[in-house]
Length: 288
Image (tube, one colour):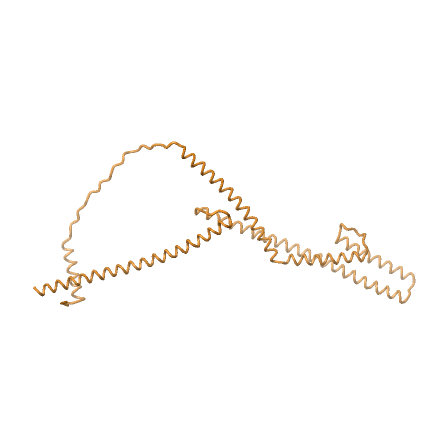
Protein backbone atom coordinates (compact mmCIF):
# COMPACT_ATOMS: atom_id res chain seq x y z
CA UNK A 1 0.00 0.00 0.00
CA UNK A 2 2.71 2.42 0.94
CA UNK A 3 4.61 1.80 -2.28
CA UNK A 4 1.48 2.29 -4.35
CA UNK A 5 0.76 5.50 -2.51
CA UNK A 6 4.28 6.77 -3.08
CA UNK A 7 4.00 5.86 -6.72
CA UNK A 8 0.75 7.78 -7.01
CA UNK A 9 2.33 10.79 -5.29
CA UNK A 10 5.28 10.60 -7.65
CA UNK A 11 3.02 10.41 -10.65
CA UNK A 12 1.03 13.36 -9.36
CA UNK A 13 4.19 15.39 -8.87
CA UNK A 14 5.44 14.45 -12.32
CA UNK A 15 2.11 15.38 -13.81
CA UNK A 16 2.16 18.76 -12.05
CA UNK A 17 5.74 19.31 -13.13
CA UNK A 18 4.88 18.50 -16.71
CA UNK A 19 1.89 20.85 -16.58
CA UNK A 20 4.05 23.62 -15.12
CA UNK A 21 6.69 23.13 -17.83
CA UNK A 22 4.01 23.23 -20.50
CA UNK A 23 2.55 26.42 -18.98
CA UNK A 24 6.00 28.04 -18.77
CA UNK A 25 6.69 27.12 -22.38
CA UNK A 26 3.37 28.59 -23.46
CA UNK A 27 4.02 31.76 -21.45
CA UNK A 28 7.41 32.16 -23.09
CA UNK A 29 5.88 31.63 -26.50
CA UNK A 30 3.20 34.21 -25.68
CA UNK A 31 5.91 36.65 -24.53
CA UNK A 32 7.83 36.15 -27.79
CA UNK A 33 4.66 36.69 -29.80
CA UNK A 34 3.86 39.84 -27.81
CA UNK A 35 7.39 41.15 -28.38
CA UNK A 36 7.05 40.63 -32.13
CA UNK A 37 3.64 42.33 -32.13
CA UNK A 38 5.04 45.19 -30.03
CA UNK A 39 7.88 45.75 -32.52
CA UNK A 40 5.40 45.71 -35.38
CA UNK A 41 3.16 48.21 -33.59
CA UNK A 42 6.13 50.50 -32.86
CA UNK A 43 7.15 50.35 -36.52
CA UNK A 44 3.57 51.12 -37.59
CA UNK A 45 3.43 53.99 -35.10
CA UNK A 46 6.65 55.47 -36.51
CA UNK A 47 5.29 55.14 -40.04
CA UNK A 48 2.01 56.77 -39.02
CA UNK A 49 3.91 59.66 -37.40
CA UNK A 50 5.93 60.20 -40.58
CA UNK A 51 2.73 59.97 -42.62
CA UNK A 52 1.08 62.55 -40.35
CA UNK A 53 4.02 64.96 -40.76
CA UNK A 54 3.83 64.49 -44.52
CA UNK A 55 0.09 65.28 -44.49
CA UNK A 56 0.75 68.41 -42.38
CA UNK A 57 3.36 69.60 -44.88
CA UNK A 58 0.98 68.95 -47.77
CA UNK A 59 -1.74 70.91 -45.97
CA UNK A 60 0.65 73.84 -45.42
CA UNK A 61 1.74 73.74 -49.06
CA UNK A 62 -1.56 73.11 -50.89
CA UNK A 63 -4.09 74.32 -48.32
CA UNK A 64 -5.91 70.98 -48.09
CA UNK A 65 -5.23 67.67 -46.37
CA UNK A 66 -5.69 64.45 -48.39
CA UNK A 67 -8.40 62.30 -46.83
CA UNK A 68 -8.25 59.29 -49.17
CA UNK A 69 -5.54 57.28 -50.90
CA UNK A 70 -6.61 58.54 -54.33
CA UNK A 71 -6.31 62.18 -53.19
CA UNK A 72 -2.88 61.39 -51.72
CA UNK A 73 -1.68 59.84 -55.00
CA UNK A 74 -3.16 62.74 -57.02
CA UNK A 75 -1.26 65.22 -54.83
CA UNK A 76 2.01 63.43 -55.53
CA UNK A 77 1.25 63.33 -59.26
CA UNK A 78 0.62 67.09 -59.24
CA UNK A 79 3.82 67.67 -57.28
CA UNK A 80 5.79 65.64 -59.81
CA UNK A 81 4.21 67.60 -62.67
CA UNK A 82 5.08 70.91 -60.99
CA UNK A 83 8.66 69.81 -60.43
CA UNK A 84 8.98 68.82 -64.08
CA UNK A 85 7.59 72.21 -65.10
CA UNK A 86 10.07 74.02 -62.84
CA UNK A 87 12.97 71.97 -64.17
CA UNK A 88 12.00 72.70 -67.77
CA UNK A 89 11.47 76.39 -66.99
CA UNK A 90 14.82 76.66 -65.20
CA UNK A 91 16.55 74.99 -68.14
CA UNK A 92 14.90 77.42 -70.55
CA UNK A 93 15.88 80.38 -68.37
CA UNK A 94 19.45 79.08 -68.13
CA UNK A 95 19.61 78.71 -71.91
CA UNK A 96 18.26 82.25 -72.42
CA UNK A 97 20.72 83.55 -69.84
CA UNK A 98 23.66 81.87 -71.59
CA UNK A 99 22.59 83.25 -74.98
CA UNK A 100 22.05 86.78 -73.63
CA UNK A 101 25.32 86.66 -71.72
CA UNK A 102 27.16 85.57 -74.86
CA UNK A 103 25.60 88.40 -76.89
CA UNK A 104 26.38 90.98 -74.20
CA UNK A 105 29.97 89.78 -73.96
CA UNK A 106 30.39 90.04 -77.73
CA UNK A 107 28.93 93.54 -77.78
CA UNK A 108 31.06 94.53 -74.81
CA UNK A 109 34.22 93.25 -76.50
CA UNK A 110 33.37 95.15 -79.69
CA UNK A 111 32.74 98.34 -77.72
CA UNK A 112 36.01 97.95 -75.80
CA UNK A 113 37.83 97.38 -79.07
CA UNK A 114 36.28 100.52 -80.57
CA UNK A 115 37.26 102.53 -77.50
CA UNK A 116 40.83 101.22 -77.62
CA UNK A 117 41.06 102.14 -81.29
CA UNK A 118 39.73 105.62 -80.53
CA UNK A 119 42.16 106.08 -77.65
CA UNK A 120 45.06 105.00 -79.85
CA UNK A 121 43.97 107.41 -82.55
CA UNK A 122 43.66 110.19 -79.97
CA UNK A 123 47.16 109.48 -78.66
CA UNK A 124 48.55 109.51 -82.19
CA UNK A 125 46.81 112.79 -82.91
CA UNK A 126 48.16 114.29 -79.70
CA UNK A 127 51.67 113.23 -80.66
CA UNK A 128 51.21 114.67 -84.13
CA UNK A 129 49.83 117.88 -82.66
CA UNK A 130 52.80 118.25 -80.33
CA UNK A 131 55.17 117.56 -83.17
CA UNK A 132 53.41 120.17 -85.29
CA UNK A 133 53.64 122.74 -82.52
CA UNK A 134 57.36 122.07 -82.00
CA UNK A 135 58.36 121.93 -85.64
CA UNK A 136 55.91 124.61 -86.86
CA UNK A 137 54.97 122.69 -89.97
CA UNK A 138 53.29 124.17 -92.95
CA UNK A 139 49.58 124.85 -93.37
CA UNK A 140 49.28 121.80 -95.58
CA UNK A 141 50.25 119.58 -92.66
CA UNK A 142 47.72 121.40 -90.47
CA UNK A 143 45.04 120.64 -93.02
CA UNK A 144 46.01 116.92 -92.87
CA UNK A 145 45.75 117.01 -89.07
CA UNK A 146 42.30 118.57 -89.28
CA UNK A 147 41.24 115.80 -91.65
CA UNK A 148 42.43 113.15 -89.20
CA UNK A 149 40.63 114.88 -86.33
CA UNK A 150 37.48 114.95 -88.40
CA UNK A 151 37.83 111.21 -89.13
CA UNK A 152 38.33 110.56 -85.43
CA UNK A 153 35.22 112.56 -84.54
CA UNK A 154 33.23 110.64 -87.14
CA UNK A 155 34.38 107.32 -85.61
CA UNK A 156 33.38 108.54 -82.14
CA UNK A 157 29.98 109.64 -83.47
CA UNK A 158 29.34 106.27 -85.13
CA UNK A 159 30.22 104.39 -81.94
CA UNK A 160 28.03 106.75 -79.88
CA UNK A 161 25.05 106.30 -82.21
CA UNK A 162 25.50 102.52 -82.01
CA UNK A 163 25.40 102.65 -78.19
CA UNK A 164 22.75 105.39 -77.88
CA UNK A 165 20.48 105.32 -80.96
CA UNK A 166 17.90 107.68 -79.45
CA UNK A 167 20.38 110.32 -78.20
CA UNK A 168 21.65 111.44 -81.61
CA UNK A 169 25.16 112.80 -82.30
CA UNK A 170 24.72 116.41 -81.24
CA UNK A 171 27.20 116.07 -78.35
CA UNK A 172 30.89 116.89 -78.50
CA UNK A 173 33.49 114.14 -78.75
CA UNK A 174 34.59 114.20 -75.08
CA UNK A 175 30.99 113.98 -73.84
CA UNK A 176 30.32 111.07 -76.19
CA UNK A 177 33.41 109.21 -74.95
CA UNK A 178 32.47 109.71 -71.28
CA UNK A 179 28.90 108.48 -71.92
CA UNK A 180 30.26 105.41 -73.72
CA UNK A 181 32.55 104.62 -70.77
CA UNK A 182 29.66 105.02 -68.30
CA UNK A 183 27.51 102.67 -70.37
CA UNK A 184 30.31 100.07 -70.36
CA UNK A 185 30.55 100.26 -66.55
CA UNK A 186 26.77 99.85 -66.28
CA UNK A 187 26.85 96.79 -68.53
CA UNK A 188 29.64 95.26 -66.43
CA UNK A 189 27.55 95.76 -63.26
CA UNK A 190 24.55 94.13 -64.96
CA UNK A 191 26.69 91.16 -65.91
CA UNK A 192 27.77 90.81 -62.29
CA UNK A 193 24.12 90.81 -61.23
CA UNK A 194 23.23 88.24 -63.86
CA UNK A 195 26.03 85.97 -62.66
CA UNK A 196 24.63 86.03 -59.10
CA UNK A 197 23.27 82.50 -58.51
CA UNK A 198 21.43 83.57 -55.36
CA UNK A 199 19.36 86.07 -57.33
CA UNK A 200 18.43 83.38 -59.87
CA UNK A 201 17.46 80.99 -57.07
CA UNK A 202 15.36 83.73 -55.46
CA UNK A 203 13.52 84.39 -58.72
CA UNK A 204 12.81 80.67 -59.16
CA UNK A 205 11.58 80.49 -55.56
CA UNK A 206 9.24 83.45 -56.11
CA UNK A 207 7.85 81.79 -59.23
CA UNK A 208 7.36 78.52 -57.32
CA UNK A 209 5.54 80.28 -54.45
CA UNK A 210 3.30 82.10 -56.91
CA UNK A 211 2.37 78.83 -58.65
CA UNK A 212 1.68 77.15 -55.31
CA UNK A 213 -0.60 80.00 -54.25
CA UNK A 214 -2.53 79.79 -57.52
CA UNK A 215 -2.79 76.01 -57.21
CA UNK A 216 -3.98 76.28 -53.60
CA UNK A 217 -6.73 78.74 -54.55
CA UNK A 218 -7.84 76.54 -57.47
CA UNK A 219 -7.83 73.43 -55.28
CA UNK A 220 -9.79 75.23 -52.57
CA UNK A 221 -12.44 76.35 -55.06
CA UNK A 222 -12.64 72.83 -56.50
CA UNK A 223 -13.04 71.30 -53.03
CA UNK A 224 -15.76 73.80 -52.14
CA UNK A 225 -17.60 72.85 -55.32
CA UNK A 226 -17.28 69.12 -54.49
CA UNK A 227 -18.53 69.71 -50.93
CA UNK A 228 -21.50 71.66 -52.26
CA UNK A 229 -22.36 68.83 -54.68
CA UNK A 230 -22.10 66.28 -51.86
CA UNK A 231 -24.32 68.42 -49.64
CA UNK A 232 -26.96 68.72 -52.36
CA UNK A 233 -26.80 64.96 -52.98
CA UNK A 234 -27.26 64.27 -49.24
CA UNK A 235 -30.25 66.61 -49.13
CA UNK A 236 -31.74 64.84 -52.14
CA UNK A 237 -31.26 61.43 -50.54
CA UNK A 238 -32.74 62.68 -47.25
CA UNK A 239 -35.90 64.00 -48.93
CA UNK A 240 -36.28 61.02 -51.26
CA UNK A 241 -38.89 58.46 -50.07
CA UNK A 242 -37.52 55.16 -48.84
CA UNK A 243 -38.29 52.21 -51.09
CA UNK A 244 -39.50 49.13 -49.26
CA UNK A 245 -37.94 45.87 -50.29
CA UNK A 246 -40.04 42.69 -50.19
CA UNK A 247 -38.17 39.42 -50.39
CA UNK A 248 -38.40 35.83 -49.32
CA UNK A 249 -38.83 35.14 -45.59
CA UNK A 250 -35.68 34.18 -43.76
CA UNK A 251 -35.41 30.63 -42.44
CA UNK A 252 -33.12 29.90 -39.54
CA UNK A 253 -30.44 27.31 -40.17
CA UNK A 254 -30.59 24.23 -37.95
CA UNK A 255 -27.29 22.74 -36.82
CA UNK A 256 -27.43 18.98 -36.15
CA UNK A 257 -25.29 18.02 -33.18
CA UNK A 258 -22.74 15.27 -33.55
CA UNK A 259 -21.47 12.96 -30.84
CA UNK A 260 -17.83 11.96 -30.84
CA UNK A 261 -16.85 8.57 -29.54
CA UNK A 262 -13.80 8.32 -27.36
CA UNK A 263 -11.02 6.15 -28.70
CA UNK A 264 -10.11 4.07 -25.64
CA UNK A 265 -7.22 2.31 -27.33
CA UNK A 266 -5.68 5.62 -28.36
CA UNK A 267 -5.98 7.03 -24.84
CA UNK A 268 -4.38 3.92 -23.35
CA UNK A 269 -1.53 4.12 -25.86
CA UNK A 270 -0.91 7.78 -25.00
CA UNK A 271 -0.94 7.00 -21.26
CA UNK A 272 1.51 4.14 -21.78
CA UNK A 273 3.83 6.35 -23.86
CA UNK A 274 3.73 9.05 -21.19
CA UNK A 275 4.62 6.59 -18.40
CA UNK A 276 7.43 5.15 -20.51
CA UNK A 277 8.91 8.61 -21.09
CA UNK A 278 8.64 9.47 -17.37
CA UNK A 279 10.45 6.27 -16.39
CA UNK A 280 13.06 6.90 -19.06
CA UNK A 281 13.70 10.49 -17.96
CA UNK A 282 13.29 10.31 -14.18
CA UNK A 283 13.50 6.60 -13.32
CA UNK A 284 11.89 5.19 -10.14
CA UNK A 285 12.70 8.21 -7.93
CA UNK A 286 10.49 8.25 -4.82
CA UNK A 287 9.78 11.48 -2.97
CA UNK A 288 9.03 11.17 0.74
